[in-house]
Image 1 (tube, one colour):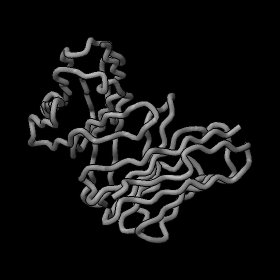
Image 2 (image 1 turned 45 degrees about the horizontal axis):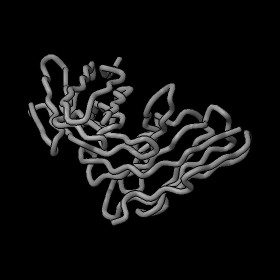
Image 3 (image 1 turned 180 degrees about the horizontal axis):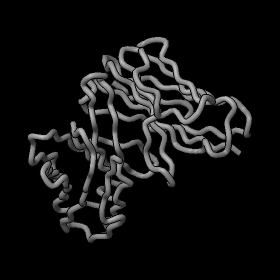
Image 4 (image 1 turned 180 degrees about the vertical axis):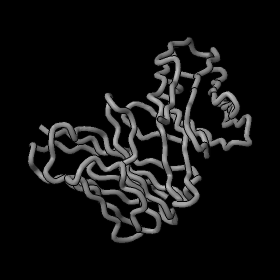
Length: 113
Length: 116
């Protein structure tokens, strides 16, 4: 397996624009997680899915953030409208079970100007 | 409030030397403790996962210990290599059985630099 795949790897956008981050989890993994990492706050869990169903989105910072998982092999994290404080590295991870090893993707570095 | 404190914040050692990283936590209820290695510009990679009943777990030259009574964990790296230069992140997880919620509390990491 190629591991968790994220795209794009880098995204530069202007404030107010819509941003969509994409993730393909490892095949057979039932759980998918979205994290954000910044120098100020470190790693933070945003939302996670079990079998394509969102379980806990309490980490999503604002209504400007939304995530979907239309099928077992694809998830998106959307920010609309984007703001400079959204600049961060966004990671997607997947695992077989909730207590199992999580495999992280390479991340998307988002810069909002 | 759940917290995870890691020390030292940064560490520089010579290649071939051993080192130990610390993680203290106040997380309740406790489910497991994870150590990750994160190379610059890459995603975190899992090193170990330890549950309440486990005291020690090894992964090659990495050995993690857990003292659930004192709520402390350590990550020992033996015979360090240049490739060990990375950030090491401790994550303590709560799992609420009733709701099945996964609640991770992240440490800020220890930055390790191994010099030749």
